[in-house]
Length: 162
Image (cartoon, rainbow, N blue to C red; front, side):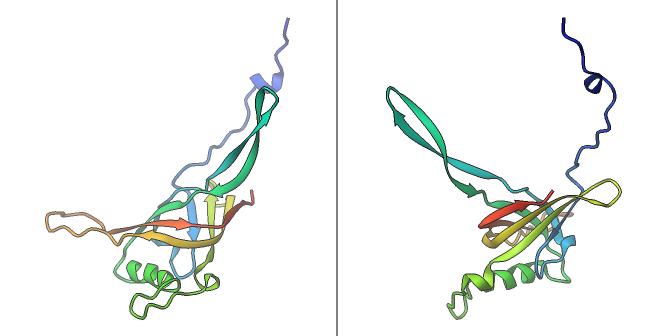
């Protein structure tokens, strides 16, 4: 007869992470403008090997998924201007100048905050750049619509510190 482990049946302290406790740090974009952000994720390619009369699989290259986020667009400081300053480092539409990746790739930090304000998780996003941006929607019939800036950020890789 199986014996239950007391560590499994007795109370254990448990505090889940919650979605609304985070701070995102980006150069030139204030943290209070970040409404939401999707945490990093990746996909590993699968390499299929022929082996006698069956297949074996091994892991191939890892690809980090793009991060989507939504920013509020305040009047002051201008949300759209902050995003465009970062985007202009990659490509200036007025002059046609394209920048070096050393200029437009940035390191971002996503801190997950605990219930007492301590940092309980930290993602460092390396080599991030804006790959897609929209600057909101304007509508005469909307009474309480807030202008938001959806962004897609591509990156080289991520590090989960804790």
